[in-house]
Length: 167
Length: 156
Image (tube, rainbow over all chains, first blue to last red):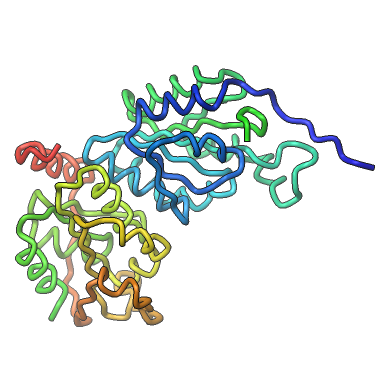
């Protein structure tokens, strides 16, 4: 029997979110992910990173020169990113904004993503980092996260569910 | 050449640059013996000094950035090496003694550098000699001193 693929609800067009990113960030450091694939095509300045920890550190380097950059990764890269986050942004008390895709929550998704789908939110919160849901609040979640990251110098994650953006 | 002499040499040869010095003995000894406000001393984030340097190099293409790494940190951060070819304002040095000295001198594998990258990675061989140095100062002090220097010199 063919599996029916359900998705979370689309929140806004990728162009609107890309406009926000292009207007507010000098660069986006990303590890490729299918949920962000179409969005990434619309982002003007971006750097592909082979590891999530390097994406975080590059963003910190930009922050040291008082320029804002965005980090994008999938939830399976969270583990790699943590030592870098703790050793840069947290230790030197600076803020950063990270978009993370929450793969593995839908029934039809592949088995290797399931565990991360269950633990992503809890994992981020257990580290004391802030977390906003794009699935609930769309662009407002991003704006709140932006404010918290760059005005209050917090480490902030925005969680995207599969279907929130066109792929 | 010991570590301090190697770092001193690098600083002297790149007088117009700012410096990022990797966590462990590199940052400890540089902070203790050669402290200056145009250097940013990493305290943690193992293997990430080069990536931080790349972010800085992207943020200001007119600023010369020198990254000084130990060979173990370099190995840990080697997944970022492919980006080295992008930056004309970034110079990367690796201090090589083939051991992880901060953690008890465990022997390291070779620093394998593919030909295409060899001109971007400056390897300096250093001795095993280490001195008893304290952890660098408070991270906020390090950051504020560095940013103050950047502001005074119109780099940010």
